[in-house]
Length: 538
Image 1 (cartoon, one colour):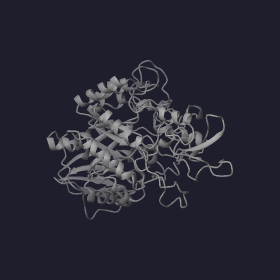
Image 2 (cartoon, one colour; image 1 turned 30 degrees about the vertical axis):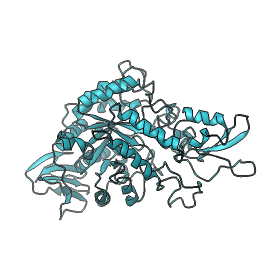
Image 3 (cartoon, rainbow, N blue to C red; image 1 turned 180 degrees about the horizontal axis):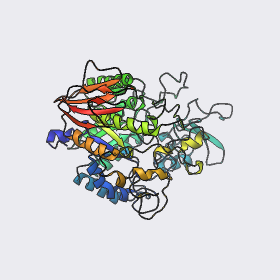
Image 4 (spheres, one colour; image 1 turned 60 degrees about the vertical axis):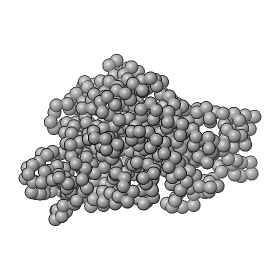
């Protein structure tokens, strides 16, 4: 990392950020669930990997209806994970190793166990407590129909009717996700004040930034109108008023002497609308889901990369590149399929997968991603080449998507299976007590443990370590596409003689003239085999 003052202030622009899903990373107390003690013990592993920051999925107290995205207290730590004191120690220890900490904030909704919501239920209709949420009378003769036709993103209606304190069927409340995640009403000043205070609470404890869950969803259209065109603008996504919220948040972040940052989660179809969130007085960066969703195809990838860089240039924001996260099918699995794209509409569960092909392409994709200008996110386990676990027994699945769709969508548990660290059998060093993890690990993961891969020059783990080391020392110049490449080849330079060449065609292609091969995702001679990436000095 560049530790000049300017480099320190702009650390986020080119950072390699590692996503930790706490429940599945490492289990320090041996109860089968990952925790902060486990993360603290593995900080040297992450420092050795070569990352600049860790992003934690929500670590707050939660009933875990949606993996912690149903928060019951935004100023404490889930007891299963540890304590607030432990979190403060973790932040301090990470900083000592040169690793910054980004935590998730969930401002669109909270848990139905949050004190605000339990108070709203008890207070009844027309109360001040209910104005912090979206309580509405139903339609129909007796209010028996939902207030509008909005659908939950987890399946089913986006409204649930409550039983009033007197026992009568009463108002409905809005939840764009699980019925245990009531949406907060951002027109209420209590909500804005509360979250500004939450930001300061964690910034004052040394947190370096926030990943904002559903960053486009906080503001709803006036009057909560019906959705008339599911393919058009939605009345609960990307409504203009959301930008005022982030301007206020940015002022708070900029009030700290060292750079604190925001990264937004916005799944938006319009790149120009996306870029509005990244204006200089709003969020610092946003996840690039077009790249994640893109199939393994040279023309389409080049289009997405070019469009991404063009979208970010006018607002002077760095792009962020990501291949996997806790919500999507792991890319080792996606890249081994006939259709290598990703869509929530069809997650292609149990589609035939060529695992070896998926691994080869995942290695190539890693080097492509790490060669691009901007920041990069690495989801825990991708550096081990882990695949999606698609054959989990129904009885262990915990994702509300599985239950709300009655099993039609098997959900996201398959990318959340705990990490294999060592040994030949589960729990693969996830804990030292031998307790079964909260989701079962496949036996074949014995080949993917950190222990097995460390020191093996051909392993995925050592490829990531070498790539991250080289990336850290490279100047962050702009992309220039190399002209005259064969069909199916992506090739670009990045200032100072660095070139990246990716062969997505079915046959080998000649390498461009070069002085040195810096790193390759697979064996390379004077030609570059299919599904292989090489970094060159030219």
